[in-house]
Amino acid sequence: MTRVSLHRLFLSTSALRVFIAAAAVALSVAMQWLPGPGNAHSADEWLRDHFVRWRASDTAELRVAVIDIDEASLAEIGPWPWPRDRVAALLESLLSDYGVRGVALDMVLPEPADPEGDARLAALAQHEPVVLALAFDYVSRAVPLRVGALAGGAATSEPSRMAVASGFVANHAGLARAGWTGNIGFVPDEDGVLRHFPMWTLFEGRKYPALSLALFDCCARPPLPNREGSIALSSSGGKLEAFARVPFSRNWSAYTVVSAADVLNLRVPLSALSGRLALTGSSALGLSDRVATPLSASTAGVMAHAAQLSALLDAEAGIAPTRWPGRWLAAAFSLLVAALAVYSFPRLPAASNMALLGGTALAWLGLAYMISPHDAYFSASGPLWSNLFLLMVAVPFDWQVTQQASRQLLGTLRQYVANSVVDELLRLNMRDPLAPVRREVTTLIADMEGYTGQVEALSMDEAVRLTRDFLDCLTRPVLEKGGTLDKYTGDGLVAFWGAPLPMDEHADLALDAARKILLEVQRFSLARQQAGKPPLRVRIGVESGVAMAGDFGSSSRSIYTAVGDSVNIASRLQELARDFPHDIIIGQGTVMYARRHRFVPLGEVTLRGKEKPTMLFALEADGL
Image 1 (cartoon, rainbow, N blue to C red):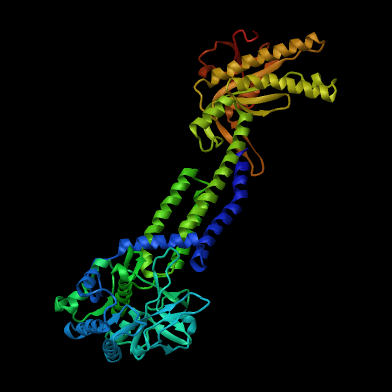
Image 2 (cartoon, rainbow, N blue to C red):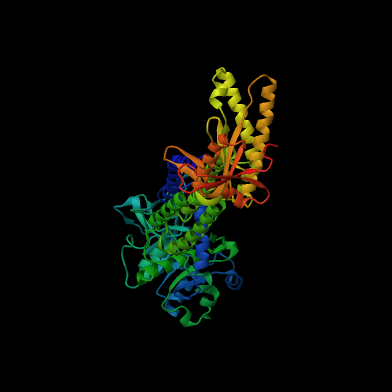
């Protein structure tokens, strides 16, 4: 295959290469704006979980305190459930003794207990900055949950912005007049990890805030009566998400966690709780309020509410990460990689292209790490899946195209040159062995003397057979001696040595081939004479010099050939052989380059197109 043909092969595949790149970009874009398959979603969350852990800060959270009904509290005060009077005492101590700004109770009390304690809790919930919990159910059941009496809630004009609940577990009717209530129900991801909270829940036409949002609205200063436009609902492509991603921006060690028993017995320093928002819950295994989060496989559920409360406070303080167009950045990155692939894949080997995709994947991971706190809903794995698609489809495709071109190129080369030369080209891994180069070459031109007279009395089949057999006598020695077959000239050929591979012995090898051609033709001629046919004579011209060797031609047709003055002289020498008794006529350039042969001078002749005479030579005993 010529260079022009190779060029056409690559052009014919360019449209398919662009299509593959476009499909890779479409895959990334689809993952940004369409629900992805389970594997893609899992990959996204796996990446985000690692980003969360790497980014989580140890800076102390001084605005939030967690009151933990832990194992030590149960051992000191008594097993759960505690009398309601003791729960009320805990809340009162936090508000009066420690001066917290507000307290949320991360547990539902669906059944009444001791009347005095329930009354104290009801009074606190009605008149103090206390937020009671209720838990909504988001699973469709044959018999919906209806436990306890709902409290709070407000009418809403935008139900599409809410997570829709199917049932609930609420506090008993004695606590139904609570001023503030917050939802602690959630829906974990498929892997059981809590990453999102339903910040607003719609149930029977009314909206209910999450526990952290209710505590924030109840007790943060300045109070904000409606949080629907805040961080509670995160924008996603113009549609507000019903479930907001919890940032988990701080490690658990950053939170102040005190034992409930220490609060009841006033063993906690005032400075540890004063002025903070308090969340009361339990880490005790017996109470079974444990959840998996990106920060840990098991932690108290109240800590997840604390993390979301921190995010609300950060947004209020103006220190939350600003919004970035993560989806558009991911799509643009995939488009850039695809464009780079279209340019580089046909130009680089497969290993380099694989390294390129690996490098861009690492670059995207770094960029995704930067974007992740600024966009809760872009697909971090989208560009990686796009790169994987390119790796699995585009790299093999271009490798196959390259192999096809190589096979065709090798097939073409084997028609030009000896197998040993092709093998050497493969070993050297030359990128374009047919590209024109300036080389020292020796050209051999041979044809049959009196060809027209030989074939005019023959039938078509006999003439074709004679021509083919004669050309075989010329071709075999050329290829055996490592020559490059330029072209056939009807009853002859043009060959040269020194390209595409440079050769130190190009002149001697050409002369070896000339001797071998002469012997082959003599044997063939003898066999014809024995059959009663006329003898054959071959005329050969050989000359050496600098020439341009390579793939030449037009945009529609090309050939691998050598061009130069020495080539023209070889042609003139071959013509002069008819005037000499010698079958091989050699130019003075070849005599200068040859090392293993001896020559006989034939005198000077002025060649056609030359002003000065040229010395001619023959090989010693060239008829042997």
